[in-house]
Length: 106
Image 1: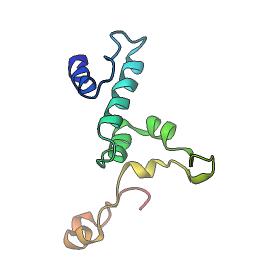
Image 2: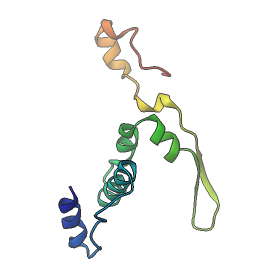
Image 3: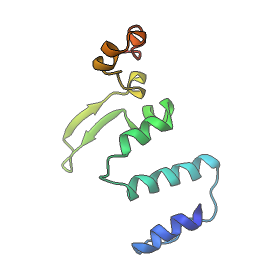
Image 4: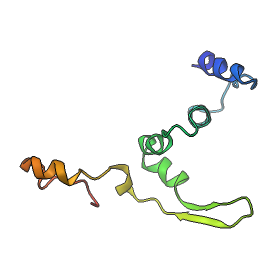
């Protein structure tokens, strides 16, 4: 995995990825950050955050988002209901077996 990350980093003149990490969690955070940088603006971030699970979501999706002057743009508050999207009403209408299966919180 390090070789693949270094190929991406070499392409844009960034230094090689560290060869050692203090923990598995530190390595995972590094890879997640690399993915965030590489795919910036491509619409993957929200799905990635949800895929990483509730604990990670609570860490990165809580608190204010500030503009460069320090003004709060939005105050995010994570809820586990956001891990799942609602089942579209059209799908529920077409399939009666889904009638009582809407995802929690919707």
